[in-house]
Image (cartoon, rainbow, N blue to C red; front, side):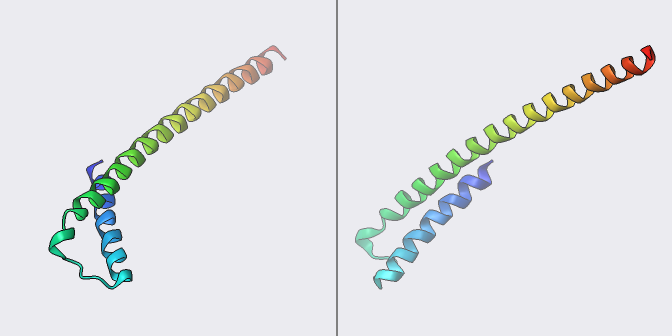
Length: 86
């Protein structure tokens, strides 16, 4: 859980470094050091949001799997009942 937030926070810092590299500006300018936590926070919040999306998707997949397994079990019972009647 925390690893996703940390990864995307680091990704946000990496984006800032990449931005400064493209602009050919110094990476650790004293006046712009406050921006690194902002980029890390934005990346971390994206990671937190993405973690919620993943949990919802896993829940939907698990519910669908359970519904399919129940459907298969009911079908098997019907087929067995039909074989016994015949």
